[in-house]
Image (cartoon, rainbow, N blue to C red; front, side):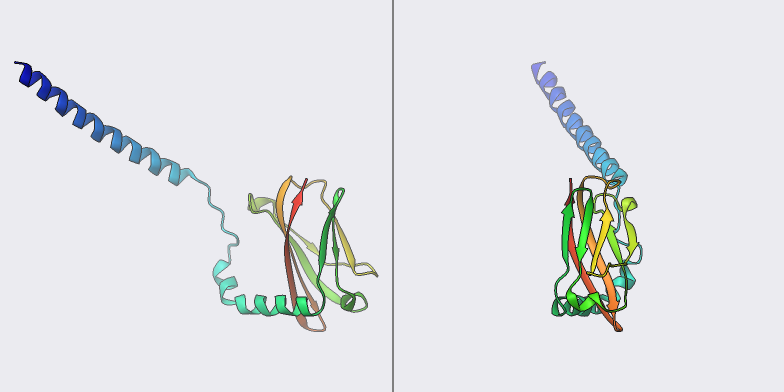
Length: 151
């Protein structure tokens, strides 16, 4: 009689292990499905095709002088190289938030006579941002990107 009692406990243990395994898998599937995943861009395929243009623009920006990005008080200050000061410059500055893409925003490039642009940060969330400056001088594309920490 003791053999059948031990045998039934063994079968219940195997059944409980299988049920726990299945429940664990179901919980993992639920967590994976409910996780929010933001793409860097909705047009990532098109941007991938034009990536060589971005590399060339980065190369142009380092050759013309480096952009300096500084966080001061409640502002982000971008200092463009002297070659940009006296020329007609068009472009944009994108503030990219890796943690939440809905917080991203774009500012039109409008430097002062010294080649500086100041962007207020009072309304920005604290944390990591990527400042992406893209501009054109004399028909030549330039691109510069730098992470900044807003405190």
